[in-house]
Length: 584
Ligand code: OOB
Image (cartoon, rainbow, N blue to C red; front, side, top):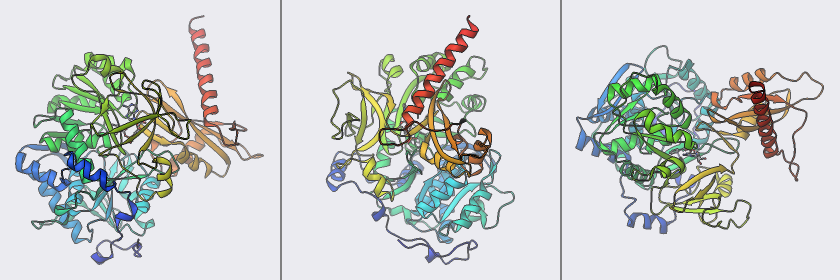
């Protein structure tokens, strides 16, 4: 792998040949040939590519509305033909700047129509989007750019009171491979940045991505992460588009579907379950919500006659709450998908009456496997389970997490979920060491989730074995946040644990051991310290507690489990005390 040696060079100064090169093949664990053959023979892998997906939508539905949303330049409504023309124009401009097939480009955009334009431009070019979330901040973007050796970052100017363009320019200055910062929208731009509009060129008829190899990697998605830094997930055209088409079918998408993207567009749920790409496959319309709150989304549901929306459980709860006093007409909404974290059965039961929509539970992961409850499932299955896999060839093993040989537990008992199948990766991108832990020798992905399988064959998620906190669908690796706390000069040790939370399901509590004989840092100062290191706000510990020591395990490691148990016991006893106070 050769690295670009050009550091902070101004845009356009570089010859197009200086892009980072290197074969992706050496960074990616391929599907073994026998499996690839099987998935092709079964008709899952059809050889379709992302450019071909859009070609078909343009041919079949060119004049129909593809996307509705509000971007930096105001309200937009593009047909499939218009979306494609924009994507081609941008692809041509990026090519002129030297962005080449195989190059990685960090896409750091909120829910604006330019998101789809950018993603399809990169596909047309054969360049690989690296999907960042709008909530990410400089330290995460820098890591993605470095790890993927990205050549460009595409972002917006200000969003959510944060200057993305300035932060992207800082990353570009620090990461040698990053030669371009492209900003959707205008306003004052940092040095080295150009607007997306200024890049548009008259495209040639054929762009390099148009004959992409369908078995090659199309983009890099982010993992929630369990260790220090999030991992990148390489997904191929073949595997991903299979999951998209099959999801669209399971969810009954058609050209009449109007999908509301309430969660970040770059998240796997919003993108492909069946999400924005499922809508392109079906020729329907995607409505991009600038924010997920009920006011914003209910107004869009009414105005655009939205038929399908996808949310995380805390959002579903907020919508249910808001619906009782809302005057908006939500009658078009036929189905609400809930996923990303466990949906309590209580909430599940309230959704249909409150929103006038059927519920679908979605249990998925960016690494692959996605499960849905089906339209014809009995109510109790939809309310109490997380559904069943997309594919007949999704292999599921539920194993004893304490057994080094990972033997399966009897059907119906709780165990750790392992999976392998036609759209589940065989390894993370450039991560040989982590792959040895996350995958079995025969290629099963260790999801880290604890599940049981019902008699009918549906999956119920009961907990997890991985060191990850699920804060209302947003995933937090304890170790990543601990490392930020450890960077504080007054901190000797830190441990992050998840605490049950009524609204979010779980929130984060940081235990911190201060440097002895110095004034202990104040909890709020530590929270600010983490935020100012440039991490997504959802990773900043919700509460911080300074302690003298941590409980340790038999081998002397910090026992997060003991910390969790202590915290849960305290929460229970304080709830009991509160109950006594209110009902003496
Ligand atoms: C989705 O993807 P990720 O990669 O952000 O997170 C995956 C993890 C799962 O391993 C599981 O721990 C948790 O999120 N999860 C759920 C769940 N859906 C996801 N836990 C309980 N119940 C559910 N319904 O979150 C994702 C990807 C595609 C579609 C939907 C969600």
